Length: 448
Image (cartoon, rainbow, N blue to C red; front, side):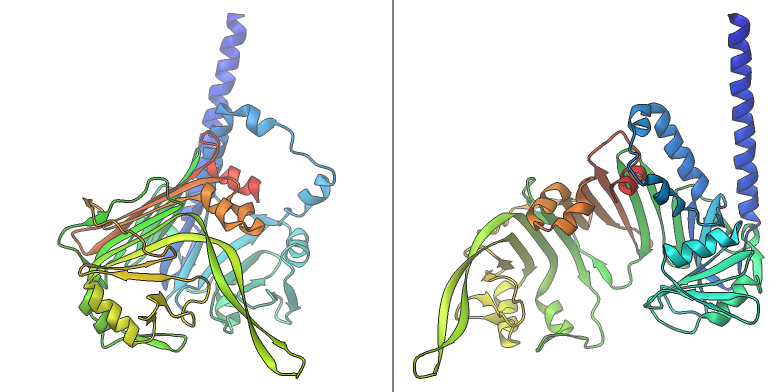
């Protein structure tokens, strides 16, 4: 028996050494990946680290992962995920200096060209155009996702600005003007551990899929944000569906004007009244009665107005703006946003609900509840921004099956923001899932 245990232990150790060597070699190969020399930003998806996290979670929760989810026709569905791609230890997406902001490119090797073309044709439903130069182009119906590929590799772009990306995609496909990732100016970022890492010259962040939660962090330059002298906020209801507060002023712009509908608001005037405090709270649903106007024709064929009352369930929302409240209210009324006679927001500006307005010398309050008693108690904080969303209650109150299907695995979202000494903002957040024991990425993908 002892001999058997020793042999088993030796086999396990050898397997662990083997897999550790394989992972180390795959990481080395990723460092040899070529990326464009003019890359200004990078997104790194650490595939191997994601696999390791999920496998480790499986060992502690085998019953959850091994229970049968196989349905009839599952064999057909599995074939859809034969992408034909060779997945490396890490996948890189990058921004390029000469291309539109927010546009990302990538390149992956193809291990089976037949499977790959079947995948983009039958699963992604892309339009394929064969080129005489020996490569093919494929794009989505909207043109915001494009591929350029041959039988060895594929270059891709995801964009919000439709352009002719064929020249740059062919350069990426043929690996022109490239450098090894391990030798690029983004090497420091690429060496970081984490499930998803992203960075450019001004911003950086990460996303990690933990057991029962998705943790994220983002640091960026605070270009237009001025910290308040002291970070305080109104006491919030712990049972709220959504709570948000912000303690920060904005830098004055060059006479910037915000326009929406038929209204215009001047930034200089808003800053004149605003004192850097904003609170938002959504508690429960309430019933609001609206007047519905329809028209009918009488016996003399004259058009007659008919008014009927309709009950609707709407969110109980309160927005409190720390400000010279009465002065801001008068300014917004002058601009046509507020009706002073009824103390409500102009229906032309916000037609969804009836929103009531209340003010004093220090606050301006907008609420779907008439005569809202907004709190003036203040609590100090080291954060300048806070958001908490009870995703279970939000899904229930939205009463939209399409939205609820995305929320069925989620429990809560919490986000905090700090102003750093080097004039940067750090945002830290966590999305909690209903099952706190199972890897969050696996739960999210399973719930789709």
